Image (cartoon, rainbow, N blue to C red; front, side, top):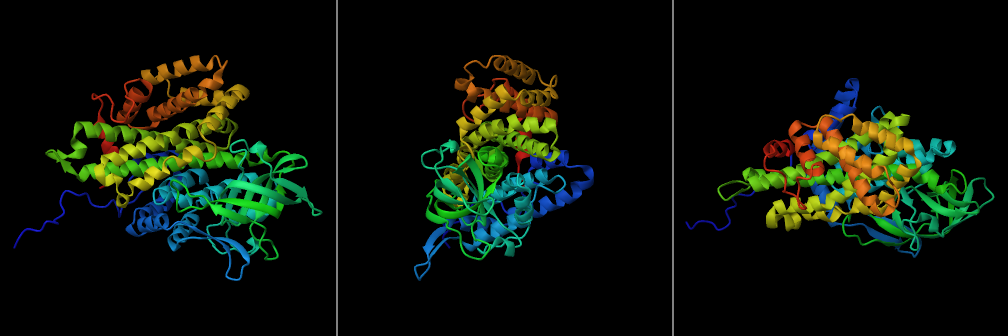
Length: 544
């Protein structure tokens, strides 16, 4: 019999059937570090259940199906009635339902709620990041609603519920609800104060009628939305329910769904308000202040989302190279490929360690931790999200031509990778926010310096970087033009300090040598060859 021409050899097995949480040593150690001992077993069991689901072949197939079958807008029913509904593939609902049931909207009143949710969010992002948008918006709406105790009492139990109900009906008839957000407009973009959506007071106390257009509205299938509009007293935050209490649908005219680069399973819409009923949240004229806590929470989720994408990209790259043979040996054992993989692993671990530290600060809630978050969240959002795109591209290259093929899953990661840098305030917005904190809130810089100071004396390159940073911070004259550089240095020094304190010596040494000590190139894979790179790569291996 002639030999077959289709015998498959030297191809790695699929990365399925594993625990996405437990296989991520940096993440598992961060959870162990930030959750008190008496609660740790419960949290680990919860995350292991989610991690095994995320690593299963079935759930990964759901992620692929949701991405391959993007949502569709249905503006009218068969009789011509306006319905403005977004239809999703069943896989989307399965993934979103699992995310809700896993507590991804239920952080605010649980012990270690933010750390356990952050870890879960990082894990679930690796299945299909699109479903994380409504989970993030719903989670982040809670602190904004708490500015109005009456609204909070009505809505918070639904938003923090672990029950997912997809049907559109009055929220008081549902066991769980989801929220979206609409701030930006065509003419304003990031400058939300330039919004022209008008809010006219009605006879009912706290009720208004909205007229206007939102250029980006997140999660348009949600039960409610927090939006900004111009009331008589200035820019104000409002709650727009999708369905009114009497069962009629609010005026929520979806004009179109955005055709996006990535994030294709998730719906982002342009919507019109034309006599839309809304309830004021907070005082008139204080819309930005009211919604800012929601923005801070979603920005942290951008950091977590990017960390999750990076981790999945690194896991796929290390897994592939651990099985693929070329030029007489495994790719993972080739010195140059090992350098690339180690460099990618360092970036991923630094992102995860920083993200979980910020989540722990949210759980603490003390004055010092709140001050740290004020400067560290925008700095982390700026830097971590910007590192995601080059990392995913390099990780795809580790798979060679296979990484350029849709079936590998890597193109989906690449398309998703720029998103978190753009959403919730792009790079310049974050850098300017850091600069604002530096110049107006001295307690924020003090909290930051206290945090990095805990690692002083442990690594001479970190010490030198802290000293250099202090020199740059000593003179903020004309700082706007160098705000990006300052923000980058703040993020890198904080990452270095955390890794020196918490990561294995080989990881901390490699990070400080490259990111802080200058022994690094412009592309991944230029680490000093004298480092123990094999140990760094082995730590990143996803257990296969």
